[in-house]
Picture 1: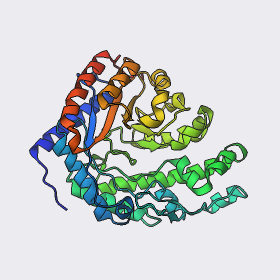
Picture 2 (picture 1 turned 135 degrees about the horizontal axis):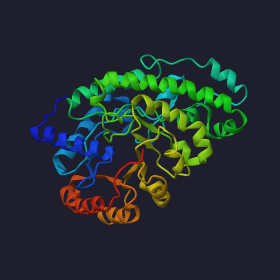
Picture 3 (picture 1 turned 90 degrees about the horizontal axis):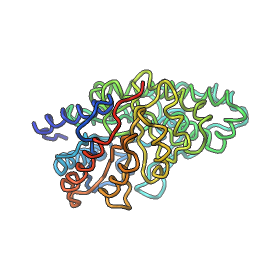
Length: 377
């Protein structure tokens, strides 16, 4: 599967990467980035793409090239996502995938493999999985390699959706059981998270090798937003939406820090809500950015404005409702001058992407002029 890489794409890619390098470095920008992606309907269902890597690659390439074609003024770095679902690490521990009757539903875990009774002994007996051998990870690594080759060094790839330590723990143990274990068996939880983290880091290293090096990846996680060199580390923690900052400090931050220390403290994903918002950036190794869903995190923006000031910025994924430009202007009015928000939009070719970008750029320029620049160290 071969695509034509134009000189415009190569030159524009250099500009966009330089823009994000400056953003992460806290250098004042003439205009904040505006990330507009242009998608086209896939001829294949989600489950068809999960079961057939070539179909998934075909759809991913089509969307990347659609963004280059229909949104040449966007600051988006089109990327591809080799995807086997957010339970791929759990599958390596022996958990079995479950597929619903909905062809556009991603897989979950059929049955938990751990119970609270004798939890420590069960964790001790868990195997040490090998990403080259166990579960669906070998297929994931094969797809990363295939996608990276198809991208020809111009269209980067994400790594696998490893979900993060607590998400994997929920797959293996269950949400209610994990919450009980926080209080009743915290040492067992830490033992489990340590085993997960060892596999997580090994899978990241194997994914980078499969992609041909960090220069070909967006980040160490599923996120298809591009993170600069030295900032490739990215973690997910949707479970933190359900507990407080003390729990985050004990069961989330130390494990995130292990990824950030090795690969750079680039980003943290949580759809929202964000009860741990201040704890996100309280650790010495804290993420430079958050990527959040506006649907679940919009009400938290006033709190994030206080906790993230001059520490981190936000990639905020637009979820509809208000018109995009109106929505972005309201975000600017709320968050300036304290916190940068980079908006991420998914639109169709018929939505006049270039006209939209032109209007968004006006807001992004004003927003940049109002920012109190510089990161606290």
